[in-house]
Amino acid sequence: MFVPERGRVLVSGRFEPDERERIRTAAAGVPVDFVDGLGDRTDLLGTATVIAGTLSGEQLALAPAVRWVHSWAAGVNNDLAAGLDAHPAVLTSSAGNGAVPLAEHAMMLMLMLNRDAPRWARAQSERRWERFQHGELNGLTCGIIGLGNCGLDLAAKARAFHMRVVGVRRRTDLPSPGVDAVHPPEDLHRMLAESDFVVVTAPDTPATEHLLGEAELRAMKDTAYVVVVSRGGIVADGALLRALTEGWIAGAGLDAHGREPLPPDSPFWDLPNVIVTPHNGATTAATRRRGVDVFVENLERHARGRPLVNVVDKSAGY
Ligand code: OXD
Image 1 (cartoon, protein in one colour):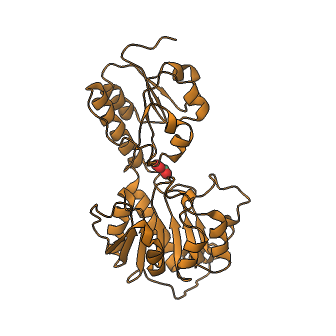
Image 2: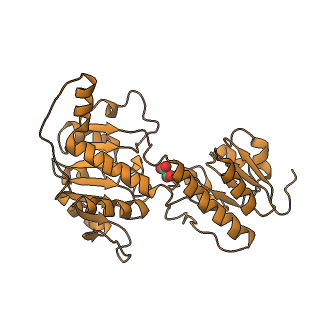
Image 3: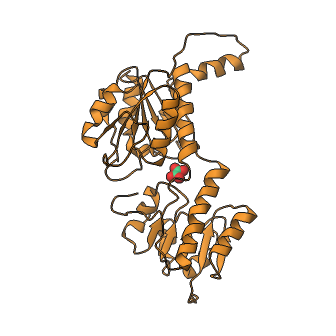
């Protein structure tokens, strides 16, 4: 196998022509190959020194020359699980790219749950004029698990809806603008007990895996809702199912799921108090462009031998 001295960049995904051009220019003369998916051209994996995309464990094993992997995702739990956790290659993420649309999605789910929007959709499909009393977000408490890019943007949006905002984050020493009370993880139950909506925006890491189990869901008000927009693995599915069917909580809005795609026989599809969306909250052209911005900046830094941004701390998992 011939690996050019200056390396070779392999980029997977679908991009606009101008985005491809920006990537080529930033690579500063290092050859760039574009593929729709990394499984399409396994021969190119063998010569790539830089790979942008999501590698499976088998694909990683076919890429002995890779020194840097860039993930188009903000959350890198799948990349780490595919073997990058123990691999010498540097891993960078697109963290921040989908934060704003994901926070919009969380607001949408909160509004839909609070107003029982599916009831209007059902009535409309039957041409039925059905007026009913519904809630308002005004004055309710939004509890956010994970005050990173998405969590902090959600805090600003929830504030604009006159909600009280509380949150849990590991680094309570960091600024959390727009959050009325910031709790350390040890105080999670306190935050859960006071929230009308508990919104999960944290990454899936060893510290957050199944963070919301039976005890946590039971600590919530029975009128409260869970909204999950980052990773389903943070909620224990069995406990959530019981919470929803036994009335420990009022309902849930789920964009991220414990198993994806959500299997057709999953009970979550049918629950009347659950809104399911297919991990689709941040799938916008601007999210893709912002991911390209991060990669382009890093290619330029790489070409100049400068430190990369958005480098994943593999032991922390994000
Ligand atoms: C991501 C996601 O991590 O889409 O980028 O969930």
